Length: 344
Ligand SMILES: [Zn+2]
Ligand SMILES: [Zn+2]
Image: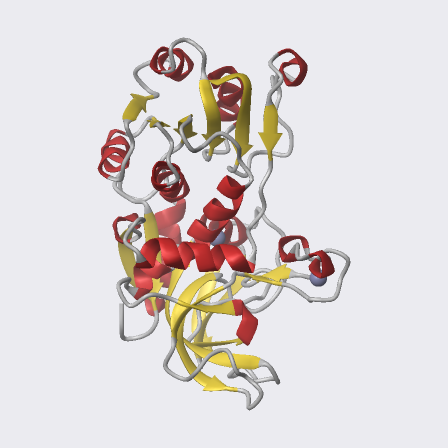
């Protein structure tokens, strides 16, 4: 099969790789689209350890092409999205249902072969049917949405609450949409980017805060009667925005730390845990049930994934695609995808 191979940081080739083998319990998926996610870019840039040389990619949609004889959950021709993480099913955490914390798991395109390839073989339990009303390219966002669903399930106060979402990249926009759908009384979108604020508004944000023009902490306080937000969802992952979240949350409120920040952040006001009695919630990947919820949210038309895809590249131009995304895109970039199959 044709596939990309990351040979060294910043060096990708496209060539012929062995077809994946179809082990018992596995399905062979003909890849349609695989998105370029921030994690892929970190691996590509050598900032995140990986089993190089590796076929990169982990946010993937496609069609079930072949099944092992014992597969019962899926059939040939099913349109699916793949769980980006593998889990062993038998370790301490898997046995407790916490497959996102599997001791023997890995990320496709990092520890195990990835999805910038014509075919990928996965356990039948790692592929989820996607609704017909969403394109293969947009459906790569299910991988983001299931993590957003998982994290908001862990957050209190969203129904009826005032929710500030810092950062309006693809994850932030999904958080904005989901908080609104989940019954937040007010969703406040915070980012420097004007066009992302406009998109946030179109996707349901009640208030927008242009962080480059106003003090976002002050503005969120004004919008919450001086108290601060019931929940602050931090998706930008920068040291500055992480510290801002502590000043933006009301006493007794909660911070959902979704953005993958640096190892440690100076200036985190640890005393606020006591004096403001706040709750800080972490979140890593998600569970199988979160894919089911994500699919139901999109199938019912409550969440729109289509606007999040802004750029398409053919597999042969994957190097160009990564350089483009790593360089920050063209000022109107949310998500770029690599088009591998015929259908978008
Ligand atoms: Zn990803
Ligand atoms: Zn495990």
